Amino acid sequence: MKIDWAALGSVFGVSLVVTVALVGLFTLGITGLSRQEKASAQGGSAGLAVTGAYACFAACAAAVAYGIYLIVA
Amino acid sequence: MENFSLILAIVVVTALAFDFTNGFHDTANAMATTISTGALKPKVAVAMSAVLNLVGAFLSVEVANTISKGLVDETGIRPEVIFAALVGAILWNLLTWLVGLPSSSSHALMGGLIGATIASAGIGAVHGDALVTKVLIPAIAAPLVAGIAAMFATRLTYTLGKKADGKAAAKGYRTGQIASAGLVSLAHGTNDAQKTMGIITLALVAGGAVAPDSDPPMWVILSAGLAIALGTYLGGWRIIRTMGKGLTDLQPQQGFAAQTSAATVILASSHLGFSLSTTHSVSGSVMGAGLGRKGGVVRWSTATRMFVAWGLTLPAAALVGALAEYVTGLGSWGTALVAVFLIASSAAIWKLSRREVVDHTNVNESDEPAGVVTTAIAAVTPPPAGTATEELAATIPAPPSTEPAPSQATV
Image (cartoon, rainbow over all chains, first blue to last red; front, side, top):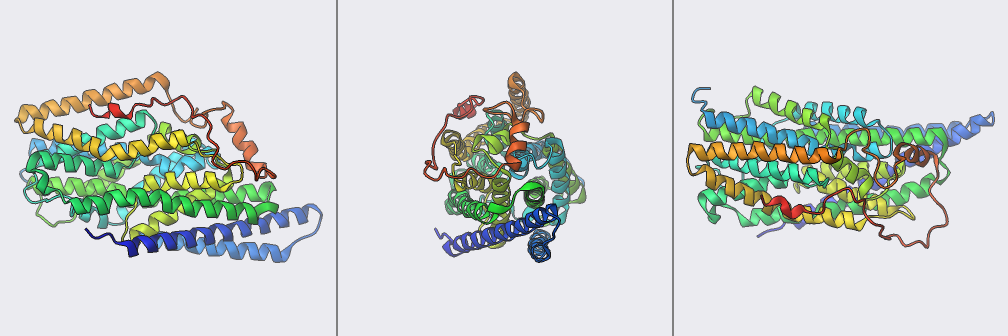
């Protein structure tokens, strides 16, 4: 009996890194948007936060697109 | 399509019935977290999942071509064996649905196939190694991998998102959950609808209706996709309730972390060559998300019942499959008897389920009746601060809604 520990290990590693990275990015994006929300409530704006937020969301969208590519391919 | 015998027609119909149970059994995998956190209305969620499952069914036929290979010897397999296997798998799916426990439809199918093969060709026709590497190890690994990833992701999102509140944050978490749930649905369609296609194709080959090594015919792909989509749309509300509310109480952040972890694990595993069960991954990630929030709890009594069901899935389906195969071996009347038994027990299980109906209207109610209100509050309330000393793994009694009798499964 041969258990493919290498494959199992890489599934574990990749899943952990990708999940934490994606969730982290997305949370940063959300934090950015919510900062903008607060700033605009006080009449200001937070341009940098919004730009950063959209960069984060774009990275997440790319990851989702790659996921769909993996399913289709 | 010459030589399309009655038994073949029965196998195809039974396979589609299995596909249907697979659909409503596994709706929870994609949509339980989205429904329990209120990101999507229950009906909208299952409709979206159904459409994506249908789309997924058409994307490729890779899985369909590999389903039965490896686990049992497919040479000399008769349509009756496949029929018996499906009977075992369907009954186990229905029973676990009745008690509201998520369990792997793939394991049920493999169990049925193994049992029926043993009854038909003896124990030697089953590859024991494949059993351990394809079934046992993944069943232990999946919830661990997904759970640990979800736990860290949950911690991170609460740490980073401390200052994120208000409408923008709620909307963001909602969108994130929907996207990851969509990915799980799509992956489920490509995997599980194709398992049925593989089974039907195997039966067609066994019955001599199509040439060996051929791809599934178009009508097989279409009907398998429709059956799983219909099952998904009807929604296994009992299992959704267990997964979304029974195991732990999910806030939007946790729902997002859990679903992202599940989607990642499913995709990573199927593309790195160590296939993990969707059900096990999602259950694991939901529990991990429960542990990741400060003050979050996992109801270990519910989780234990679920683990027991996982352990029983393969042997129980195998036993039913073996019995069914033995009876079909007695002749055509035996096959008819098994078919009647399948229909009668399915009807009985459905009848039992009507005693306490769970549907889209009460799917989010478990301990406290105010499901909609609490999720609405949870969506805007920041995580409780200062509960760091609270024990993470506190156990509180499980909802009394399920009958703790998975051992009834053996007919």
